Image (cartoon, rainbow, N blue to C red; front, side, top):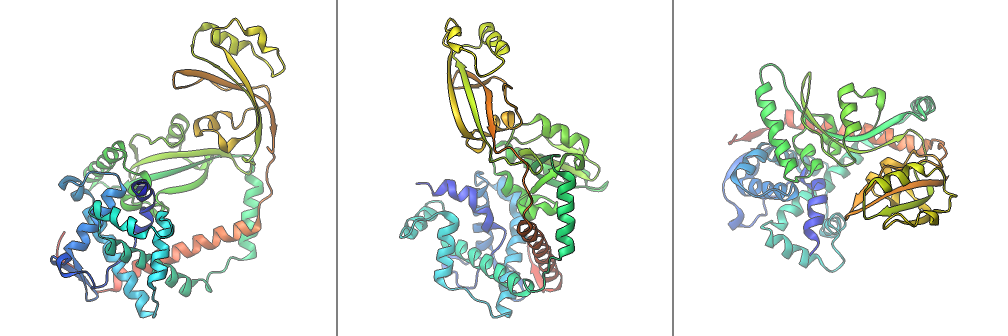
Length: 410
């Protein structure tokens, strides 16, 4: 069954949100641990949400792991109560069809297979009703934000013009796409912050999802985007972070980084030259051998172009070569993409190794490598999304501040 993989990758989209009405069955109702504007918060809800998060992070359901995530899960539970209460004040609702359709789309459940998905959740000890209430809060909150702010958010022509000028001034500059988990600290709590970031690093080393942890634990505003900072220009990144980005591979997670206000861990996704068309296609020749020896290395050093008669090198043990035409950069692995992306015609990659086979490429032709014109509609959508996200965040903070919240546990 494939639901486990989908669940781990996608359920972080749900975990940050959602609430339960008082419709849980009596056997699932344990104790009231607090109230949010009169709505009960139960120990069962908290326990189920912790289970969902640990499943999402691919962590074992142990007392130690539960203790690490409890405070964050509890805050998310409170937030979700507030979201549904606020949506109900504005007379917003969601029907079963919309809920089920949302679950099917998010988790990739095939039409007619919802009952099978429910059985999977039961086997994982997860209450489908709790998950459904989380989906309800997500849908209602998005609808509420759209209803309240969509007509108020305006992206001006001047803002678009400034973004276009920024684009023109920065075309060709190096950018990095990476994510971060930030734990802030001051002189009074540096020891506590260091302990927290160390625990997070252990979870990451145990294959917990970086994006899920960032969304739950990071103190940075980027936590709203699961820790992702998007594309950042190299000259906007401090020297130590840039050096780390240059020395870790794509999708690799860094060590703990100390900075003035705390600690952080970063994950590299990609790098590029701003404005460049990375949908380009390449003609390449792939040279491979089962042996990485002086003979193979010397052969690589002596190749200067794609037009040589490589049959002359048939004496090299296990040497094989093949020409691949019009291969898309995006079809190559992330490691090869990073190495070959900026290679020019006649240039060679380093030697890679996979399954005890050694290989490298020489670039024979490049097409579609031009810089792109910026799309004004894309700018408008980007600025609009950023403004709405900020309003959503501010709105939720105000609800937390002005509501009657009583929590009986730490």
